[in-house]
Amino acid sequence: MTTTHLIPSETTDVQTAPADRSTTAMQPGRHTQSMDPMRLRRVLKAYTTRFVAVAIESSADGYHLELGSDVVPRAGDVVLARVVEIGKHTRLESPVSRRQLLFPGREILVAYGDRYAPDQFLAHVPESLAPADLVAGGGLASQVIEMHASIDGATRIEPLGLLADRHGRVTLDRFAPLGSTATRAPAPTAGRPPVIAVFGSSMNSGKSTVLGSIVNGFVTAGLQVAAGKSTGTGAGNDPHHFRDAGASTVLDFTDFGHATTYRLGDQRIREIFVDMVDELAATGPDVVIIEVADGVYQEETRRLLEDPAFHERVDRVVFASQDALGAVAGMQVLDAAGVTTSAVSGVVTSSPLATSEAGQVLSVPVIGTFDLREPHTALGLLPKGLLASGLLAS
Image 1 (cartoon, rainbow, N blue to C red):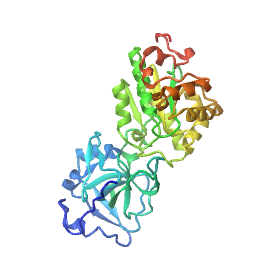
Image 2: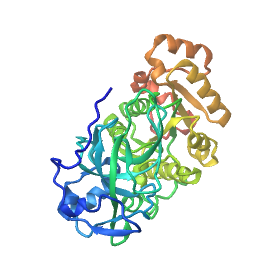
Image 3: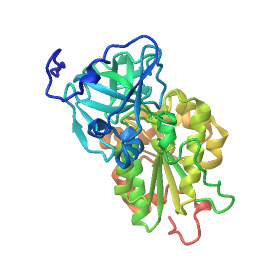
Image 4: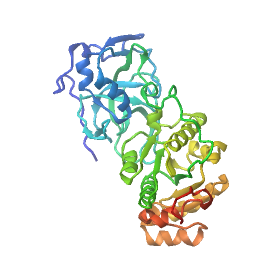
């Protein structure tokens, strides 16, 4: 079991301004506290707040905190918090994806959000600035509702106040390049590139590795690929994976102003997916490929599969599964949704026996994850009728 570390009640190595100590207890009502620019620069920033971090790096002046018992946080609000007790997450991913070691007493800048992670936490945004949990290493403040029995409890944090400026609360949406007020790329009216969506049976079924392998296979075949991740919990490893595989343009939901997509609602999930496809297609790639997080039984994922806007833009699906039974069940969901699945891959293909089991009962090929890096194999996932002029034939 991981040893926990509590912040000392009186002494700490972390230098904190005297005025900060006077506001650690919640006071009635709502009030503001000016934010010293030097203090704000020293704070550890999370990956989820990277666009806010860029603005702070440019100028840390003019920020303040909203605090008090009447302050109700919302998903996407940016909060200054103090680490109280180290638990599951011992490091905080920085805006450039460096793993920053956490210490009790250290101040961090993270975003509020809900989390759906069957092998970690189910967590919801709390209704006050009461003590909270760090439920994702990418920087997500929330309140744990349930947790997997095999993991340590969440790292505990003490919210000190919501970050604000002269325009009001600092939100991820306001600072994101593709937030709700951004100008959208027009939907292609002709010559749209083929679009592949990658789904999975659950978390950790191999979706991101499958997507990266497909990207690499296409790039090796001489194609230009744009890649994205439309749902999930904000972290930099997947977007960086897609870039490393050779994708020329990469987007994820954090570019659209969200630290997480859980509980955003069907309409917003649809908007992010549609806008992401259109934004990526507007860059002129030969192929667009997008990961949809979590399993097909997750409510928002299931509803996206049933959405006409999804079917208008997606030509083929690749399904990642942990085992043969999950592959069979997942294919039943995909078939019922009316999508065309090109292949099954993922963790299941790590086992020759499991691959054989799945191959005996499925009507689509079961392809090893790393075999997808072969140009001929990757090209075989594409619908021949939508191959643009000049692409290599499968």
